[in-house]
Length: 142
Ligand SMILES: [Ca+2]
Ligand SMILES: [Ca+2]
Image 1 (tube, rainbow, N blue to C red):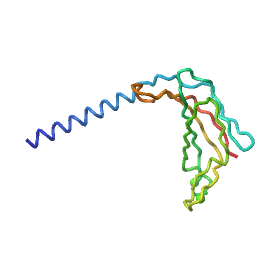
Image 2 (image 1 turned 90 degrees about the horizontal axis):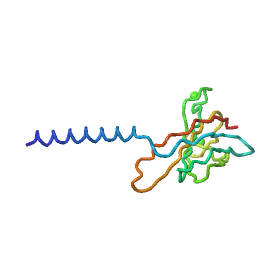
Image 3 (image 1 turned 180 degrees about the vertical axis):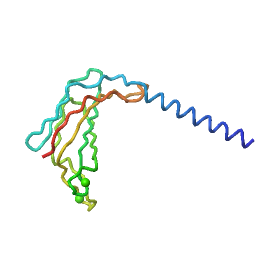
Image 4 (image 1 turned 45 degrees about the horizontal axis):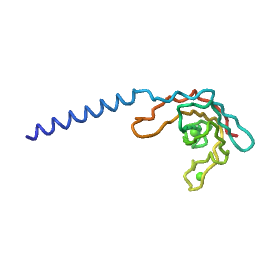
């Protein structure tokens, strides 16, 4: 009896993993946004891309390289994720903060950063939102 239960559990897990793996491979229905630009202006960064008709909203991801121990080598990436309905977002430079040294107060991030954006069409029965990201754009946080 014990053996039978163990056997069915293992099979269940294998099936679960198989369906997860298959779900990951399914492409999303929203096309990748094109012409993403990252422009650093006075006190803010402007992210702009072409409208995607199929997208209800967008998810913009920004990765900022960080030298966490001050040895001159970037060794950490801080990720920011922004949800927006417009195909243009302004983010204040002062919003790119993270408590690098863990002293409880946020530290201003500077240096190389990368952004990418994908369209989302959330709703019942529309499946996973694993839509393709745009080509990345690079900028420098002053
Ligand atoms: Ca370092
Ligand atoms: Ca700090």
